[in-house]
Image (tube, rainbow, N blue to C red; front, side, top):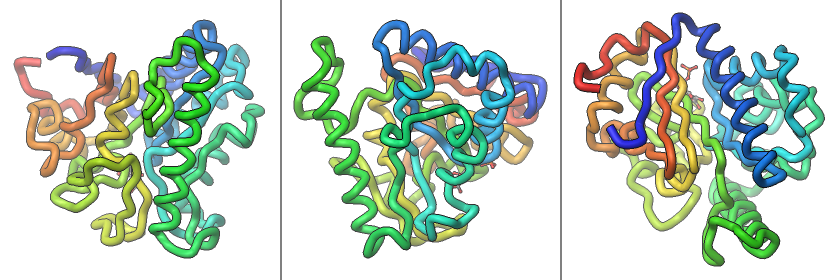
Length: 262
Ligand code: 6PG
């Protein structure tokens, strides 16, 4: 329905390899059009495997990595050195080895870098707003308006939890209900660690394209409910809608409960 598309891949590895190829192509296309490209990264097994697959692909050499802006959909509010940090995993998988510009990697503050979670939220909101402002000032045909609170996101990747959470927006919790701001702090995540920083659904849905990546039988119910148009408060993934496109990139096992009419 509408701009929502599903692509089913035969295995986890093929899903990661194909998503890597798709992302490389998308970055190339955006760079040829605009000079730079902006991607919002996700944690989770498929998201990180996709970055590894890019690092392993000769096609990565076509991308001007120094002109890719990176943001994160969420991160865990733990020490900067913790292996649980999405930014640490993304750096190990790709960002540390392809020549990205550190100034273009927008990291959510770690717990040993700021006073508290609220400070981390305010910091990321500030980074987003500053980037949006700069984009508007510098780009004659900017798609954002002067009062936009986030820059243009060309692709936003989302992992999917078995409970249908996206980023750190969990079912029935405050984060998924939060409106009017771009970033939210989560203190009681049902999945450890409990403290997280997350984009809100409003901020997520400003992306030109949202790619939801999911693999494994334990995701089948979440994929089914997400595609069936359930209430986003109970099924956060069902609320994710890119401006131009929403792609569900999944493996065979995660596709077991895709609604028939789709
Ligand atoms: C987290 C994870 C989470 C993840 C999904 C899917 O912060 O808890 O990053 O949001 O994206 O749970 O993860 P898997 O693909 O590893 O199952």
